[in-house]
Length: 107
Image (cartoon, rainbow, N blue to C red; front, side, top):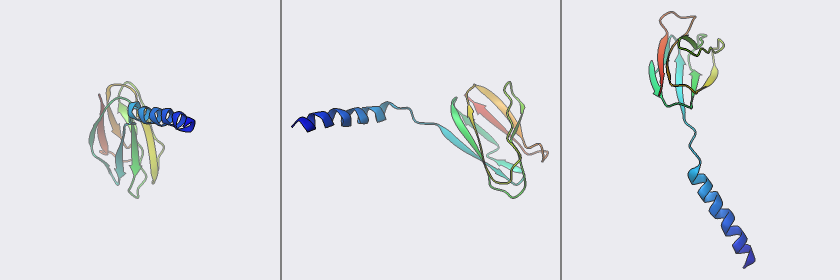
């Protein structure tokens, strides 16, 4: 009987804890040959954005217009992750390929 009384509060706490923990927001953007897909994305503040290289050519992700700047390394595969902590609109480009641009809005 004593075992049940000790186990039940632990199970109940675990169930309640899972219910109140916030979900981790994430979104993915493909870095293809000469195009970001999608070209425009809107996410909420504190979302982690992952850029996934799916093409064969080397590319980078570079902010060209925003109060906060960031830049990935040039890659041909893999991912680059960035947590969006400010409400702002980013204009991003691949500095290797003119015209390879995208807009990321953080609300």
